[in-house]
Amino acid sequence: MGKNSTTGRVGYGIAIRNHVGAVLASSTQVAGAFFSPMVAEAMAILTGLEFAQESGLFPCMVESNAQIVVKLIQSDIVPLSEVGIVIRDIR
Image 1 (cartoon, rainbow, N blue to C red):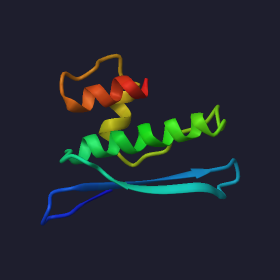
Image 2 (image 1 turned 90 degrees about the horizontal axis):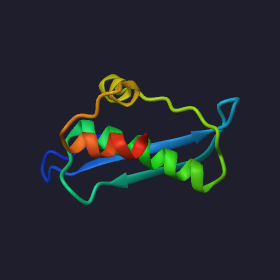
Image 3 (image 1 turned 30 degrees about the vertical axis):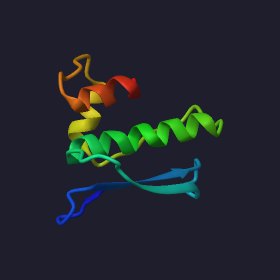
């Protein structure tokens, strides 16, 4: 995940790996809106899950270094913020 300091746009990437860690597919995207880094991290997870589902790669496991986002996904609480909308979609 990265943020362009000039434009404020956020980009993120996903990698789909198999059970031995070999990359099956990867993608990078630039958000069409100006999201916070936390929302961009959640969007990356959502995008990866959507891709895995569309490609028939379920069940799957998600890995992320965004601890706060992972804890929000695992929590029973849905934040009343823009990241909460993405968290609901992930669940």
